[in-house]
Image (tube, rainbow, N blue to C red):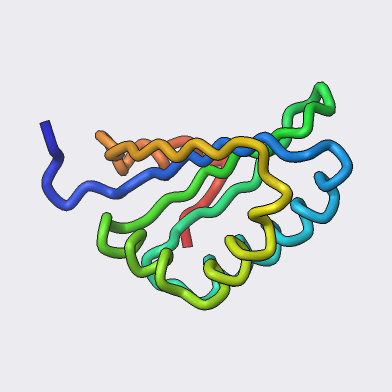
Length: 114
């Protein structure tokens, strides 16, 4: 059941060519920074790396709405990132979630939404 006016969470799981992980991290960090700075509807864009050193990256993105995520996909910085990293990626999986209780994000207290 869809939640009215629900925030949208995007989880992206990348498996990267091992010799390309550092270059990929630099590019994804730039994309994350530009997304948070330039996109009003992008509230979080976390870049996660497993502590076992695996050549994987997970993105946790939080948007005010599905429309804001669609806007993200049209941005020049996203297109540049997507093009620049295509040859680095072995596998990419995108998952979409509706945030059931947006108030819970603030309740955690460790991170503040902008």
